[in-house]
Image (tube, rainbow, N blue to C red; front, top):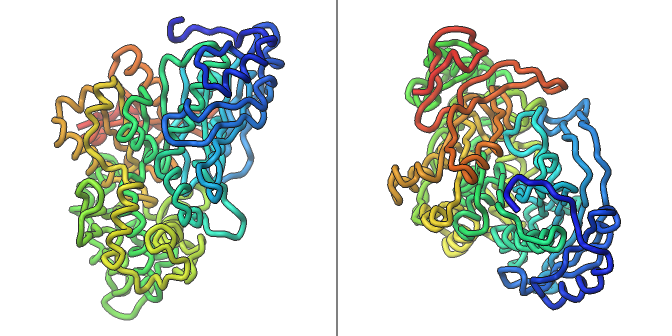
Length: 566
């Protein structure tokens, strides 16, 4: 059946007994589990079935379907409150079969891998696996907006995609550090890469049983940690997905966690910067850099040029400390944030550096967007020991990762940590976690397509890490070869979660057009939309392929056609 055709879930319920037997035996020719006449009953019949470990492409326990429930169509819901607009939106969904299950661990001490697979009543022959976020530990439902999606576009499930999500092999526990799972080797392996491949394989088996055939094309879309997961799939399992969208990926994972520790320690005591002085820095950056693109509009369109123009030394106090200048410890803290972090030894794939962050986007409101210094770097108070989230997410994440992943000591004195003292363990975790392998030749040979997007006002991670990685791929394979299957775009003024400037674009359509019709992305535009229906367009910018940036030419500043990429 060709891609894009719709068909109902099918096969007689009488085949259920044979299905269970076939699943247990690993038989690939099991009849489809759901009927065209009563899809709801067919959906429920999936509950309790088992997928043999041999169907999973990595050493694994069996997969069990704990529940399968038919869900009625639902309408769009926008919550009145939430951290940012995209998180408040629950898209409209069609009728579908909600399947919840788990992949059993190999070790009795390791947790199972939880997953959710959503099977639409009318399937388009494709699947889309969602990435996670942070340290995961929360089940990704596959029902939310995909990264960078326009608020007014149909959800992937509504477009007919089977959607897939996982908790990556552990569940967060109240009152316990989200990094604690890493003390278990199998849980760490699952989080690093194995869980996403295992869930992918299980979802394919479910599609075979539900629709009578495997998907024509498989896609992966993720942001932040999910972006790392997408790149990891391209690097480790290059034939598993046909198209991957990776937004703001924490790909240099080891470097990021160590930078989080360094940057947090820089703000202890007198180095911490309160909101009034954050605004001071933000306004100084805008004064120096906002108009570099030909338009003063509150967006630093060329942050690379801004790095050369803005110098935090200009804000150093010449007399007594006050709100209109920065003290010596505060200047040193900003300089640490902006500076690369160098390692005395090579991490995975020969990486020895984590790039600095900024400038631009310093004072994006943390309460509204989870962006800017207040959310990621500084928090609401100077770093405390033990780390807490209100001290800044980068500090809380980085410090916890050092304790649980690298030192394997939750009581470690973070002020005395030196990576060279844990060199062997740092290298071991780097090989597991870092998605920095530049050799994507096998992914290219599979016909895979990759789109990366870096938000340039991101303080959760450095966008320059993604840029450095993409350039390493170009160096390894050649610029012309990379252009055949991969693109890197940058969004100026946009924070980690996609606010602060135009940030929304239909990447799923762009990716599927490239994979299925050989049509490379072109003319993409970023939209900034109102967060409530009908999601009115506020302003737009062209989405420029790196290293081009938008330059204002003439016309309405809110229109993308008034800018060119160069």
